[in-house]
Each structure stands twice: as C-alpha cells, then as structure tokens.
Length: 41
Image (cartoon, rainbow, N blue to C red):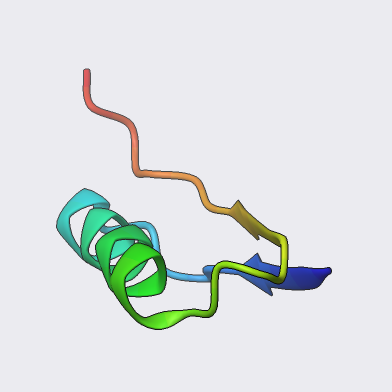
C-alpha cells in the first residue's frame, strides 16, 4: 500500500492531486491519501 500525505492546504491543489492519482496510478496497488484543507468559514 502506498501512503501519500499532501502537505499543502489548498483545496484546488488537493483535488487535482486526487484526480491525478486516480488517472495515473496502477489499479492493482491500494493507495491511502491524506490531506486537509484550510478553514472555509
């Protein structure tokens, strides 16, 4: 299993990273990604 921790807190970048992972990583290996956005309110 791959563990990916996004250190940035920009929501657009985090969503783009998730999209890239879904489109470019092999489907035979599990991936756990963890990220947190800045406060929205």
